[in-house]
Image (cartoon, rainbow, N blue to C red; front, top):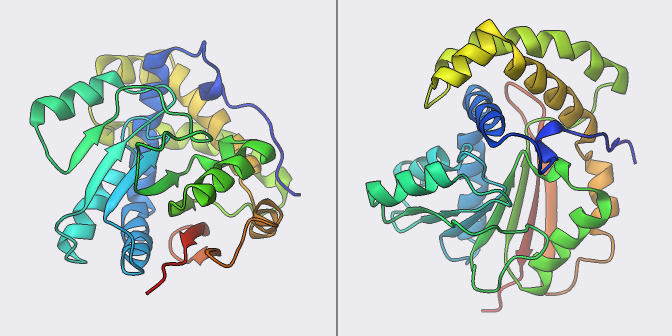
Length: 263
């Protein structure tokens, strides 16, 4: 397995929530630049048209990621008007949860209780999605996530904005590049708080953590060959897996797990 399991700061329970929120806002900007919402809408449309209900249970949502925009595309471009999105996280973003409740948007909600992607409650029924988060999981946990979806006959969509095809050493060269890039993309983060600005441009704490976690994320991403190892023995006559790459502004990969629906 090419993947290397190093640490990312945002994985630690002690990591300050406000810094984690700053990082996840920057990730939303990155996903937008790389057209992740368009990719996700395309993949979800494929799953829904194979018979799944248009309810998406987004795991490891953080500050919402690209899924809210993907939902809009799913409705506007693919005509799935009854699509509904439930955001979840191990460390729920209570600010976003409160904001969504106040807005009263029927099609988007945030599950305010902690949700472990490896042990999703049977009450959360729908297409499970993991966007740029599957690489956080060690192989045993990643396999458990896939097995849990299969055992509960729930579709799952894994999406990563890197395919880890470059030589490992090049990911470490990217640290100063990501640090500098943070200075340019921060103005596009929403909401743009005073902490995001001060700890980016005055005391560059956020760029440091974003650069480290970004480089490590690439080194931790499962390759297509690694995915073969994870799904070995999980595919059955009534549950199938499909993996592949999506071309565009970056080398992106996906893994779909889908129950085989009988006529």
